[in-house]
Image 1 (cartoon, helix red, strand yellow):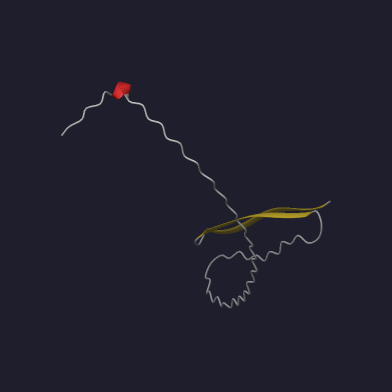
Image 2: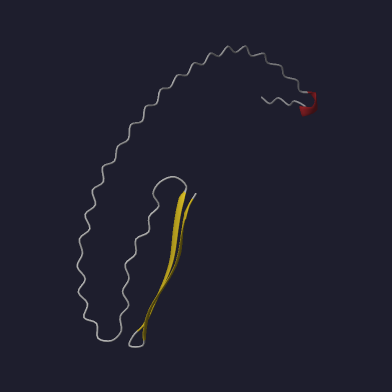
Length: 93
């Protein structure tokens, strides 16, 4: 048995009665603690035969409205040149 319907003459009605209630409650409590213990111990033993450049740097910013900056360039050419150039500023407001 077959039934043919012209799509241009098709009508459809549907009534849907929907009643939706939604309640959502959330409580998030995040407590995070990270204990980090870093122990760095190193030994450098270098036998230098030729040129050497050595530097020690301490840059700090402590307190309110402070600023420090240090730019450091190290150039080493074996048996020819060892150079350290440092440029910095410090400011307090």
